[in-house]
Image 1 (cartoon, helix red, strand yellow):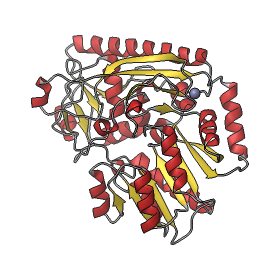
Image 2 (image 1 turned 90 degrees about the horizontal axis):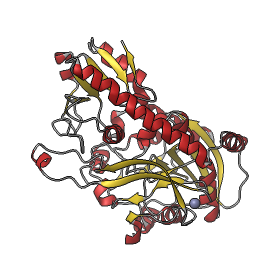
Image 3 (image 1 turned 90 degrees about the vertical axis):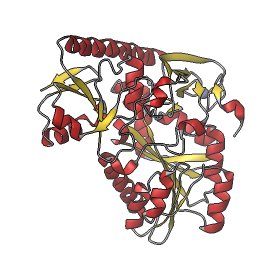
Length: 414
Ligand SMILES: [Zn+2]
């Protein structure tokens, strides 16, 4: 990996345009999945600029600072796909849709880039596919133990060679919630292409810029997500590599994502792609004016949420957070809601974050049982994009207090 791809970015990650416009600054933030031990709270945390910028030429919204991926996706990276029910359902649908479309058959190879604990590949395996995962963090060990062959490695030219040699050419290559995360877009696409033949379908799932703008989900902006894809810049990116987007669909994953299917060579785009492109144009998704109104709403949302929590805290109420994730840490970092406002965040039993503190805001993460035992007056649903599911579950577990939904407009749900 070229070292100039780490640090401040002065050119567009797709088209290399040197004139990028600032959309929204979320300040300086630490690495948002780096949970801290009690001892480490005493150390100075390193922070990095977190700015969303826009390229007027190809339409890509992106970060203007890239942290070394070895620091962001450290070996003890605490994210487990299998712990999120919504994602498990989404992966079932991905394996089913690609199977129905005839992109792979029983006995054929499916490769997943950034395969995490193997949850997606389990779904392909269930349908008879031969599977291989690529995952750089220690989660790869969990996948291997559960019967999903996984190479613990970054996805690069070497991994491509290894897979081709040992397993052959895949029919489907999947990259869910990772295509926008990997540094050096062009090398990434080149490596994906090197793993494909003319029959292979590359399917990616990325958070969709349109959902982010429509739902004011500015908390999806954080250091792991280097690019905020709409369909238009993605088509442009693949075209630069002589690949075509053949189909695309909107999906629920991660609060609103886009699933994009691409092949090598020149192929027509489906009616769904054309319709989505027309809709993007109609809502002026690639205009700085649209993005600036989005940024303004993000600042309003921040002020409203902080005002609400401060008011409640002054009455002596206990307030805690439900769930703790990179995304919610971005929200806490931007709003500066820290351990003076939230007593703790709860996480599902077994989460590797329990007993550690959130980066930047230093809120202790505890087992969700604590919420039921303590019954604090208010619980902020930090993963508000799956708010309904969380509220239902937490209520059923016996929590009697009041929920606060932080975004897009902070509100109280009794
Ligand atoms: Zn560009």
